[in-house]
Length: 254
Image (tube, rainbow, N blue to C red):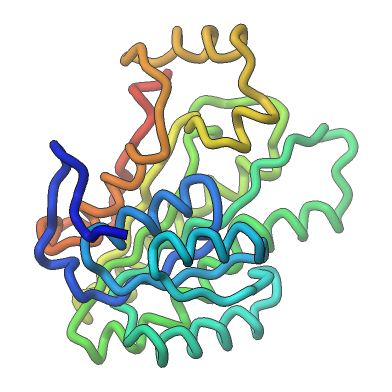
């Protein structure tokens, strides 16, 4: 991949040569993040459990990766350690991995609840726990947690996912306080309905999209690259005094 930002997009010199780790980097927003950091000249690593998709992203971007089920915390922290040895001490972490599977609240079991929190929230904390000491030794870093505006909009059909994603904001603000003295910044990027291939295959219909766009201030569907642009800014030194905050990429959804 050519490490040049697309025409009209920002280039951040502070990202060149930086070691970046992205969770869930094989598809959707995650794959766009890996590509965007690679174009900035960063040293990019990612975790994912979809080996076929991950190999394609790695080949296209020259990123390094490890197969990992993020619900297995011991395996996740071991993989993060291995990748840090290969790509260098991470000074940027993007906690991206999640799955917004639909579910009926009447059918939720304790086991499903726990599995959804393990998939959508728990690994974020333990990834931070794994990489933050290295960031502190390096003099600082940036952690970007990917949230969701599903709970802001009170979207139906995914209450456990929405609850887990709402907790991301508590994680961000508490860890920003914990890590700030080491010059580690922690922020949340909050996407709206992003037109990934998964969303388009499963839930985007002309009727659903038209109804959603009526709730946005801006009239256009949101592509994954819009999220990546915000993440790049928060990873760069240009956002040096931004922490403990939410950065919405939702077209002004209401």
